Amino acid sequence: MNTERIEPALLDWRNNEPFAARYNDIYYSADGHEEFQRVFLEPSALMQRDDLGDCLQVAELGFGTGLNFVLCAQAVLENTQQRLHYIAFEAHPLAPADWHRLAEQRPLPLFQDLAKAAPPLLSGWHRRGFADGRIQLSIYHGDALNGLRDLNARQQQPIDAWFLDGFEPRKNPAMWEPEIFSAIAASSISGTRACTFTASGQVRRGLAEVGFEMRKVDQRPRKRESLAGVYTGKSQRVRPPVPRHIRIFGAGIAGCAVARELASQGINVELFDPNGIAHGGSRMQASALHCRLLGDLSATAEFRARAYHHARPNLARPDVAAPISAAQLALNAREVEKQRRIDEVYGDSEDPWLQFLDAYAVSEQLGLTARSALLLKDSAIINLPQLCTKLVAHPRIHFVRSAGVGQPDVIACASKSRQFAPAMPLEIGDVFGQLEWIAAPIPDQSPRLSVAIVGNGYVLPGEAHWVIGSTYEQSPWEAATATAHNIASNRAFLGAGEVQTIRHQRAARCVSSDRDPVIGKVDERIWITAAHGSMGSSSAPFAASIIASEILGWIVPASTRALTSVAPDRFIARQARRGVKKVGG
Image 1: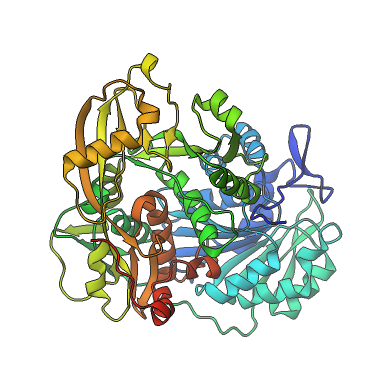
Image 2 (image 1 turned 180 degrees about the horizontal axis):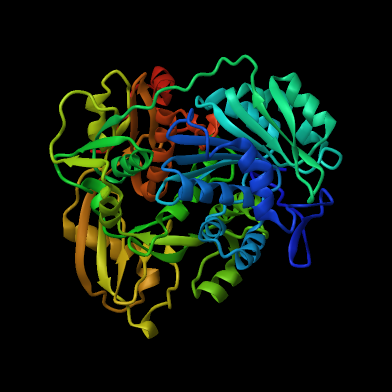
């Protein structure tokens, strides 16, 4: 099937408790909270060990309803000063409706946050942060063995404790194969704990064969026993050091997002920018959170969808954003076909974050005229300067209003990034744009707009005023010319009456020759995040998580394939074929 979707869990609800119909097994016992303590937390000795780093690395096979994660995170927050990176693998994640139902039953604040930010039903890695970044969740949707192999290839930090909570071996044999045990051992280091509810001899022998010294744990009167063990085998892994200090050049959304990610993980950050916080393209006070999805299953398509979903829970904050749905309209047959392909890849009735609307539905639901539309239901209007200011408000971030001296660790200087990476042939440049603040049109003279329009038009509606745009100027236009262009381009949404302009805002946004951002290493010790263009509200936070993960030695929440579409060195081969492509004016 040509899709990135993943099959959700098949839940039956028995006595208002979730039951896994696919495996004919329960997710947890009635005493699930106590069971976690007895089976996982106490045998793992996470709260007692003094040989672990500032950030605990815990991995779980079988994420299920997220109960073990929430209870582990709660224990870390209440009993330690440490942070937690929790890595989980789930072949069939819960659908949004199941998360909502569970949230009604579990009053724990962290579970409420998890349910609101549950990853989409898309395959691969997803990252979520909680408790102001102190708790980080990396979850892999798909086959556990594939995820484990990717973890072993790209996660440098060893795992401190394994919670093996897949359904029992008789009902889910694929979770307990020898290759799984070998992969678990490959991520472990001397002293790594492994704990599991099952007391199966097959599991005990399998873990022992790969280097775990296993023991039985008395679980009476609930059940007879469970298993726990300590890794004593040979390991090639060491705990790589984490830098104590990072220098970032550029304090737009790209640089501020990286700064906050690193500061949340205990790294001191110096953030340099001679123009202050949120200059350049990040000075725009209204930006729609959206992405230009593709239906071709390409690496670029994968990156864009993951970036959007990563940004949604991070940016949907009332202090910097106003929630709204966003619509991309199709005005001709070719655009309709493109939207249908996108819907085939991402549309899912179980997780309707994206909806395809035909012409009739566009008229009935949105009050607009178009051949079709894609509706992103959980979008937002972001105030970028406010967001940047909030991101850098952290005691570990020191802002310096200067250009910085020497080489940075992270380059986030938009088009000026080229001067800090002269050996990398970056095809990036400035394209100017203008937004208009206008009085909200009189309702009986224009469509009653309840969604943001992105794509064919750019309209962000509001109670007191609307924001319209946005020009795409290879060289700067006169402000009046840009205003006229914006009004003409959005006339279908403004009605025939006079448009009352309030003010405008202009900025140069950095773009690349292929319109994808530039994210990754430019050499062995320097990273770049730039050229986020008109989709920076989604791609910049994702880039920050990618770069922070590499600096910390964590699994990156994007596939290797997706990362190639934004890698800084992607222009080298292209220039060998066609020469250098100039960008901007």
